[in-house]
Each structure stands twice: as C-alpha cells, then as structure tokens.
Image (cartoon, rainbow, N blue to C red; front, side, top):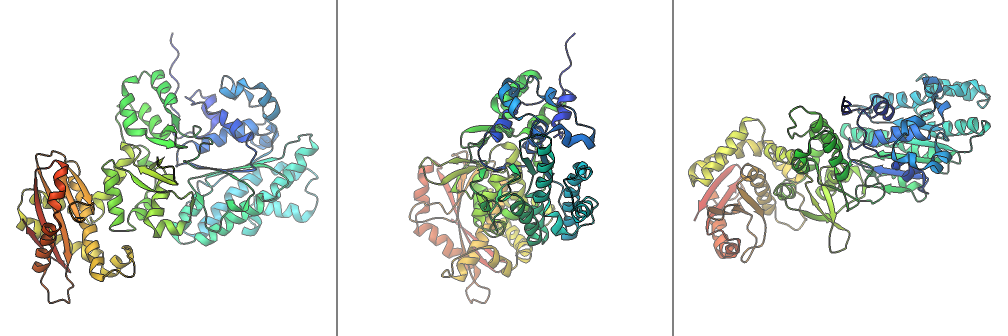
Length: 590
C-alpha cells in the first residue's frame, strides 16, 4: 500500500510542527551552518514577506537552543530527532559542537501593526514580556540577587513596567542567561533572534508615530547588542535595511544580506531544483511552465533563481491548480500604492514601461530612509525591489546600476490594477475610459474630445492645482506652463493601461527631431499608430484652447516625428494635437 502524500503546510512557520506532523519540508537546514560559521556578530537578512524568514528562525532555534530554555513550555526534550535525514545531519562534527548548546532569546515583531502609538507600545511590551515569561525560571536562581532587579523583572513580565525598562530587555536577559548557563558548564554565549524588526516601523510610518517607534527599536537593538560581551550572535530579519538614525551602522562589520547579496541567496524562497522536486513528488510536472510564468523570476544575489514559496505551496495545494495571485492577495499594499503615486509623470512612465515587459536602469538603494520612500519615486522603486515587487539584475556595464523588471505574472497583476485605478474615483469610470479610447481608435474624435473633457472635470477636481505642484517635482527654472503640460501628460499616460494588450505605449522617446509626448504603437504593424503632443494654456490667458491644440499638431509636423517612426515598421500614423486650458480640452488631428 502506497504511503499517503505529505500535506502542504501553508501558513505554518513552526519547524517542529511541520516535521512532527509529516508536512512537506523544503530542506533549508544548511542555513544553520551559514549563520554559525559567519564571523559577524550581527547579521541582518532582508527578504520579502512570506519568503520563509520565520520558519528558518524556528528551525534555527530548534537546533541551537539549550533544551532547558524550554522547560516552562514543557518542551525541554532533545530536538535532534527533528533533523534526522535532513542535510545538516550529515555533519556530525558541526552537530556535536553546536546542537543544543546556546541560550536563545527569540523576539518576533510581526504582529506589531498598530494604528497609533499607544497600541504599538502595548504590543511591543507584550512581545518582550512573553520572552521574560519564557525564561522566568531565572527567578528561582540566585543569579538575580538584588530585590530591585527581581522587581524589575517581574514588572516587565507582568506588563507593568515603563517603556525604557522594556528596551533594556536584550542587555538584561543576555546577562542573566549567560550567568545562569555558565554555572551549568555551557560555554556558549546567548543567541538573539529578532524576526521582522521593521514591521513596527512600517506601520508607524503609515500611521504617524514613526519617531517614537524608531527610538524604541534603536534602544532595544543598539543599546542591547552593541559591545555586549554576553552576546554570541544576533540574527535579524526584515524586508529592508532602514538607514535613518541608523540601527545597523552602529555595529562593527555587521553582515547585511539583501536580495542583491550572494550570502544565503538560496536559503529563502524555493530554488528551481526544489520546485521541480515538489512537482515530481505530487505528480504535477505538467504545470512546470505555468508555475515558471506565474511565480518564478526572482533573482537573489544576481545569480540564484528563486520562486515565491507562498504561491508555490498554495498552487500545489489548490484542487484546481489554477494560477492565481496568492501572494499578492495576502499583503497590505498601502505603502506600495503610495510609492507608485509619488509622481504623476515619472511614476506612470516607469510602471507603464515595466508592465510592457521592459526594464528600468537605476541605482538600487541598500539603505532605505522611509522619508525618501514617500518623497522620491526612484527611492520608492528600491523599496519595491526589497519588498518583492521587482527583481534586479546587475547592469552589464559593471557599474552600480541594476536593471529592474517585474518578476512574474503574479506580481504584474498589482501593477495592472494600480494603473487601471490610478485616476478612477469610482468604479464606473473604468468603463467610461474604455469607451473613450474606443472612440479615439475608431477616429470618432468629437466623442473622444467630449469624453476627455468630462474626465477632466472629475480628475482636475480630485487632483487640484496645489496637489499637482506637490506631486510633480520640477526644477526651479522650468516654466509653470510645462508643469501643467506634464500633469496632462501624466494623466493621459496613466489612462493608456486600458489599451496595452494591443499597443505599446512610449513616452518622450526620441523620434525625428525631438521627443513626442506619447506614441501609441500597434503590436500589429498593419494597424494604425498614433502620435500625441500636448500644449497647455493658462486659464487667465487670452489664448484659446483651440490655438494650443493647433500648436501641438504643428510641433508634430515640424519635428518630423512620423518620419522618425518609420523604422518601427508601422505604416500609418494619425497625428493628434491636444490643447488644455484648465478643464477644457480640444483635439486636432491630421
């Protein structure tokens, strides 16, 4: 009789539970050696959410922790059986030297997602208190000698202490644990695990208490780990390295391993070999191409191909085995959407290009300042890389620039949805926009002009002049008229998502003697292409909107854009001049 297939452990990040319940486990146990054999005392590992950070920490804790650390959890038995037949079991020397030899402190900040500082402070205290409870056997020993220290321990454990007492947790607990286990003839210092250190900071930034949260996290980590003689090693995970008031620059030679680093590149997410083994085990080899298109595409350390583990597990477990946006649908995309709405011109141009399968060449920031994520569209795209919404390949020129692209079809869905909804105040506007472009492509210019004018009434009130000036960053020397032309340019570019299935959209690309605002190139070169130029007239001006439209059309002719576009292979182009004056619009064609 054939043994039943192992269950898929979706959402289970407890290593012991997966092994004991015989769930399918992708063997990452050599991660333990990668950590212990690294000479750095502080290691930061950044990866997107749901890429196995918490599960790897659970595995690390099971392997390294002295069993007595778990005695109040009634789990003080030897865990070596959990690692039988796994890769780490082949290295007996390493096991003898390191298995069950370290006191471990384990903090997880993944649940600190508060709307205000009061709630965040409570959740922070709760997590610190949990670890004090776990090691409260220390109170039964004479290492805590003075009544003052004992009372402080009990205050923290009972959620009655001041915040400053909780931020001393690492410094205090490593000291107590080191003394306690040294007496028991263990010669290893304390291992500290901090999972998702940046989750509290992420939500603090979104909800207006960032400085308070940053001060707390800095006090906990820097004051607790820097020059701490009781610390063996601290391993920290998060989505990105936060640079502001830097936490990690305070340490001597910390190991910072981001998605662009070779260190531990294959230890988070699934490699292609691991995915193919899973498909074979479950008899699903026929879905290999589907899985590659939807969930492949990440490139860690500029070399290692990685699949999204959450989506792979979800796909295999699903009865219908249909590709869906499993990972995208589990996350809070608030910060992503705010990143992508920074610049009404550049942001749309970037996303439009990415969605068409092209790349962006730019420098990638390894050290992220949250303020920059909200104020600078280029820095925002670095955040999107670290968060898993882009992949990076180093430029062949050998400089510090990377080629950014959308990793797979799953992630492409969020860009498509954001583009579709960029200027949609209500859902019904989508249908209105779709009809508007049908009128343009069928050359019903009067209806197109009327539709665009109606849309401007909505959009221009939603994005008022002050908002436009804030969102579109221009140099001080540029004329105000150009600022508004860029707003209308950005508006039109954002709407073009409705036709990208059949057309390539190009913005400010050099053709002829200049750079047309927008070129719509049909994927079928036998169809018609469109050249669009924009001109703005101030509401206070005597100039008519019709004059602006004619000037735009004349510029297309003067700059010989169509002649330059012949190399695309498209045989026919319609030239379109658009004039804007406040909420008025006029269209001229040739």
